[in-house]
Image 1 (cartoon, rainbow, N blue to C red):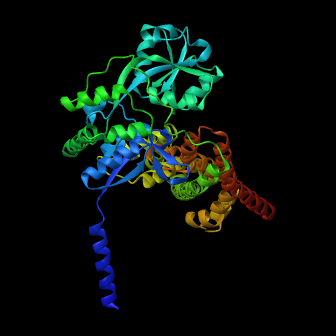
Image 2 (image 1 turned 30 degrees about the vertical axis):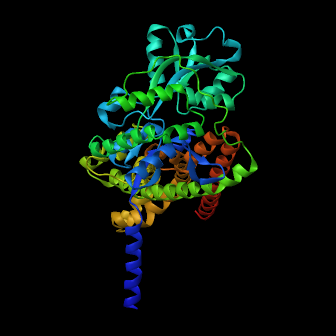
Image 3 (image 1 turned 180 degrees about the vertical axis):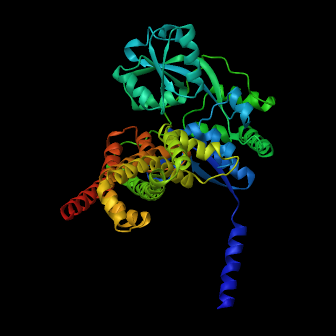
Length: 499
């Protein structure tokens, strides 16, 4: 037996030594094609030009690429925190990003273009033509900064979105007058949405870069070498042609990168739009696509259930302690606990999640799931404590006085008389809070936890529709929450009948 164990350990060690080390790169699959998207034929796999560029970088480093899902807005903070080695998913080169992170040479040049309804294409051609009009874009992008500047100088009304799908659907429905975004995003939208036209002239030019932690300069230099080599040998051109995003502007950009230390000079606006006819189309909404995504949605549902149950258990435990301390504690204890409850209830749970995950990373680097668990648990503990405190104070004072007269200690009174009655009173609101927590668990996607709502968002972005994914997501939430509510009502009815 010992020899067999030694043999197994030896084989495992050889296997580990044979496998190349991983290169973790973070991106947002909700961005969809051509950047990063789940393969509609096998949602467990990814495809997109950023996926292929990341694989080329990993190959050049002698590593194996491994994708880490992260919300687009959190890529910078996550790579600085060390959640992954590289961040890339249409990450734009900006002065602030260069100052805060280690950024590579730009590997793609994009143009900010204006998309309008076909009926407006002859009169809404430039930002100056959009005075007083609503223009949508992604928040936190170069396009958004352009619109903020245009708001001051031209009177444009910027409208920020968290995704690049809804701006174009709102434009088509008349809620917006125009959309300003990257030309490859606009090209994808035109394949998905009819009745829209993208103006040929560019409002500005920008670049996509790979971002790394500022302390990771050595790896950045190696990635720069690999990107330049892939530009020179035609690998990047082949990838871009495959995804329909190659044009002559990219050739000029490559030449500038290869002949200079950094390609920070923007290209001239108005370069011809790339030919998108051969680009892989976004997956259509079919029964096969839905069935392919069901396993991913089921896995995300399990994460949601596990996170919600554990967070609620933590909230109940902490809530009981806080409520007990506020009822039975001294002046100082009550004041401290009251202050803590008001602090937690008075600040958004999103802020608390960001503080736990990013704000404390210099002191303690919590895993994403643990940070999500603590964030939701601590937040709901404050609300639970108010429910339990109110329930404890609702027990008739006469019962408490009678118990003291009979010689019961305060602990016995709490355990045998006050606690059980308070629990019965608190059951209904506690159940409501659990259902609310189940839904609020969708917020943890901002710290890279892919739960049900985030997986649904990725699904919807990949197929270009929220109808079926939204219905499926709602169905999963109902399946999870309705049995719990029914069980709580039965328990409440039984205890009420026996009270």
